[in-house]
Image (cartoon, rainbow, N blue to C red):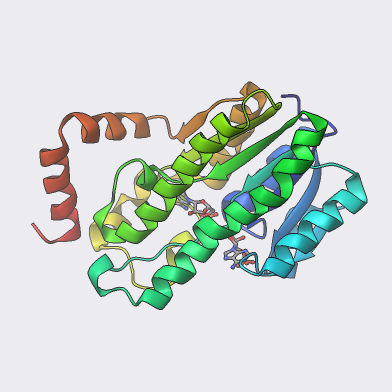
Length: 257
Ligand SMILES: NC(=O)c1ccc[n+]([C@@H]2O[C@H](COP(=O)([O-])OP(=O)(O)OC[C@H]3O[C@@H](n4cnc5c(N)ncnc54)[C@H](OP(=O)(O)O)[C@@H]3O)[C@@H](O)[C@H]2O)c1
């Protein structure tokens, strides 16, 4: 898919991967509709010409408003990037249900509802792409954030199912599975903190700009799945081939083995 002139709606665009995607898509000539809670971050990410809709994406009102405003301003939504998301670093068996529900409300249900609002518009025009920012943690369960892994795994299933449901409608879906990306993600958590050994892994992290470049390339190629860095595929393969030893190693990192 060519990006020049396309209308791209990005959630969680006030910083991190979302803001980097805004810059990356703008460089390719796309027209931007950006949403997140922090208006100053949005303004910095948007530059001139971007439509900004500040608000909490877990609110039904914000979701309806951002879609209506985008259609009003641009008349179409070509690409929806469901990027807003948060982490929760707590053992699943100890996590307050209220926190688990908050996580799913943001990482899964807001994505589902935005998709329900945007997919019919794309179907009508026989064209569009829904990009869901999952995580490598959705492809292999990471025990320092089991519930986050579960939410991102569900997002992967949603992305695959949608692709089949929307087959022959001109609407594509793409799942993005970043590994470790240098953003404020680890400090913007719903609860808990990563184990020290995970924090030490920062040296393997890619930048948000590198992640956004991989996402832009994936959209242009209409990829099904983007794993970035690509070495993440190796981890996924190891988990599938040798689940016992890999689980043991992950439990060691967590400090429970
Ligand atoms: N960083 C990583 O290592 C990593 C790895 C794999 C996957 N991911 C995924 O990548 C996505 C982006 O993460 P990031 O690393 O860029 O994190 P980040 O720097 O913390 O950015 C998160 C973005 O989501 C927005 N957001 C959070 N809660 C929101 C809410 N209730 N309503 C509206 N917007 C909300 C934030 O904006 P406001 O605070 O202004 O609302 C911010 O723009 C997430 O889905 C994350 O799960 C990240």
